[in-house]
Image 1: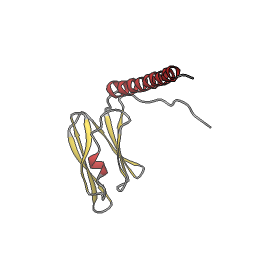
Image 2: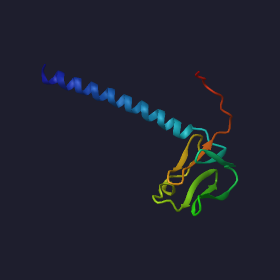
Image 3: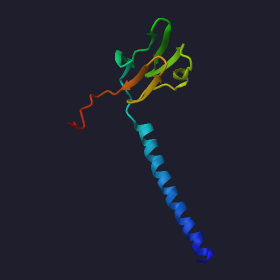
Image 4: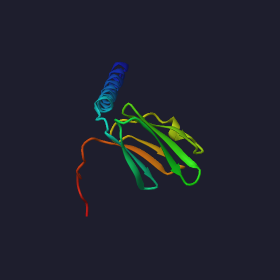
Length: 129
């Protein structure tokens, strides 16, 4: 094969790769910008739902864990964020605010899941027996 044919093959491969990356980027951007905003934030600790709170009501919640542990959940402007916690790693504090259905903040040391629930009720897609 000559040098010109080899360059053409590489050029076609790069064009194909660019097309795949562009398509994936458009799908992700569409999901990010057009995703539905949630209506409620659900607080789950160790598999038990502690409460469900409306995102349109600004409030700060103290979520206790055992005797001395806690997480502070702040709901402001339709977004939820953990602003303070005494867990060892503090990763839950560094996570960004959440506002869209399906987004979540996790605190593993305190066995805490904070997730956004959408406005509409979700039906089951399928049931497997």
